[in-house]
Length: 214
Length: 99
Image 1 (cartoon, rainbow over the protein chains, first blue to last red):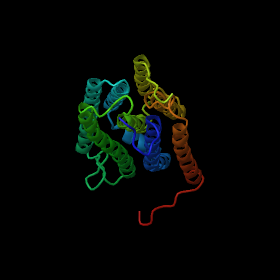
Image 2 (cartoon, chains in turn yellow, green):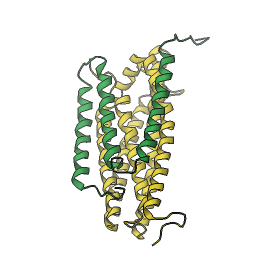
Image 3 (cartoon, helix red, strand yellow):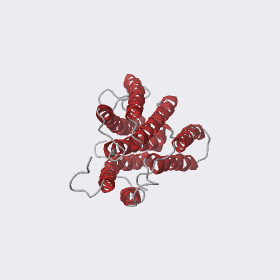
């Protein structure tokens, strides 16, 4: 097997692929950065409403989901490691485990969304908070739930995209496409998956852990 | 060092550290630390994110260019948030007409 013709070596090809992936992740930082900044501005403006909204989220489910995602990051890291040492079946095993954990995360998230929806906490025409649609608290918590659904929704969308690419990696691993010389695609997939994990690591305290004491 | 194969025990160790920090941040949220609740919550998140980036994402072992590029992105994010807050926190908010 040869590297692509515009590279001198596999090492150079791999460094380029990695750098490209990190550049892509920087654009993702900018993408999510707008939401994080908007969140910070409105939380500083309406701290009590953000705390009230946060208290309506299930902290246990949020913590479990964080753990599920961390587990999936471990299996993803082990999938990349399996590719490094050229173990095709192990790549497939760890990719499947990562996919199952990712789906578990999305399932729990879906349950939480359904719960928020049935409590009338989906922003829009049907929104109410503590039975009121017109109070200041209702207006301001609606803003919190805009950020909640916007940020976790964008995050969940990234997970869905990740699941699709994981399926692709699973199939290609089965065809023996990844070798210890060239497993760049698996490694790039890993970087993406871990990055999505990092986004959640910040979303969890920002959305679930506001002023829980007292 | 770009082909560094990390021992499984390091991945597992980082994994347990991340789980412990997750449980810790959820529990500490129930202790009243005043303004430091936010500081601790974000601090733990930064530590967790750093562990993921350094070990799971191999930033510790990869070419120097990668942390430089990603660091530049994070630096931009800091400018974005700091200058936005410098504006927002030092000026009053106008009312919304008709509300």
